[in-house]
Length: 68
Image 1 (cartoon, rainbow, N blue to C red):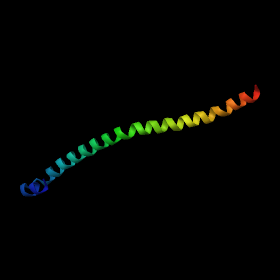
Image 2 (cartoon, rainbow, N blue to C red; image 1 turned 90 degrees about the vertical axis):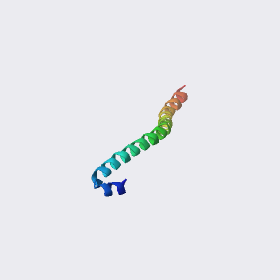
Image 3 (cartoon, helix red, strand yellow; image 1 turned 45 degrees about the vertical axis):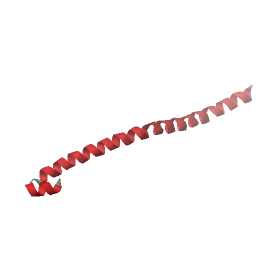
Image 4 (cartoon, rainbow, N blue to C red; image 1 turned 180 degrees about the vertical axis):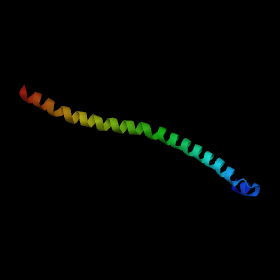
């Protein structure tokens, strides 16, 4: 495309078209990557939140066991 732009003298228009094409490719690739990473992130965060909740509740259960 650059060679054609140099031959026709419209190199600036070719670069604008290339910029648009590359932006679309990058956006499409990012959307695909995010769609793969998102479920793993949700699972990982829920695992850590579960650990923190269990760590906060366990002392309460231990105190209740020692009272009765």
